[in-house]
Image (cartoon, rainbow, N blue to C red; front, top):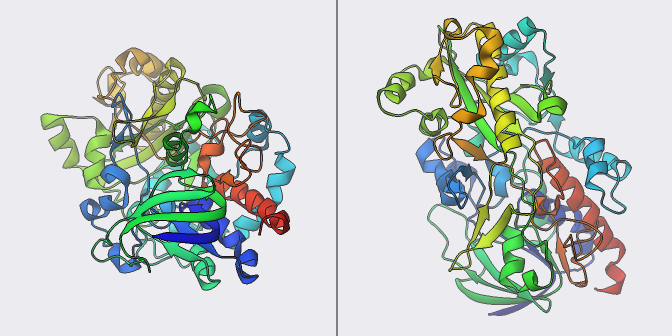
Length: 499
């Protein structure tokens, strides 16, 4: 089957969904635009809030390992992308981070009004007191007792029912992600959504791919299964990291761009737990409302509140046998938080293709990241004990389950140390892959300019987190949207020359 469009957007997550929304003015003028999504189109009734069933929303059921198996990556594979299974946590990238990226023409002053506009469109709020559940109250109690500053996490919510299952699909539509905000507007404006579409490669203004059969209980597209060629005046890759780099690599662009697929960052994360003497019931109320950036500048990490379901918690704990069994019996008493490391972009951390041309991430956790994660575990233990927990569970501790009596407070950094880090055994995870199609000046160290245009290819753009030259240090989705807004604005400005 051969088709023709003016614009094809590959991916329907934070980047692709925003691109589609921002290109509505072109659609209203008659431009033919399509969004291609490799995953299915799930209706709200699909989100059953049953953990094991909902793992299908994620690539590899949420346990997609790096090449060496040391980190598992959670990445959405559905219409709406990873905005289907994030918690609505909304951060603006810090001005200093944008300056450190050192991308020509990309400034904090350019992004600031875009953040403000998106903030309003996504209904970003500061959580009110009735949203703060027991787990979050314990976090604040512990930090207050230690004298550490705590900030509220801003959230993109509207009519939230506080059911606590944000990470496995919002059944009520309260989370204002791509599925709720941008895509309905784009579809109403005549932009076509084609789900279940795997893009194999791009070449000469053409997308080559395959439409798969529609899975049961999901919304079908208008096109039948089969191989497809789509000619387009502009192709925008918004398949995420590593999706967009992989498409370019399959298309032979790695022979032209030495940095393609490289400089991947992941925000390596650990979810850590304490055992409180009474039920906490973290599944009630909203999961995440507080964080501390106290150690962001000095030790490269954030500590945020969190809640996770029983199955994935067994993985996060890093325990085995009777320790795991006995600990999970106290699941309702868990105090939970997540540690996010600000990792540095390194050339050797990259996207690679297997024999079937499927992407994988080759990533080595640096000594600096391990040091940061160990420091964060010590601080998390302090928060837990200050909040009244009887036990803390830290995978890099001399004794992974310990009480306050087991180690003096001033010895925690010696008790939880890098020498206890064992690859694969310590359950490092990531939900924020970034890089691989970095913005920059030239083909020697970047793939696109500051408007996402691939160097030397006026018909080809990138609009997702793979553009980041370094990590954003914060949850990246809003920065992805702001960049997509900027790229779409430029496409519209130049449209008279190519439509």
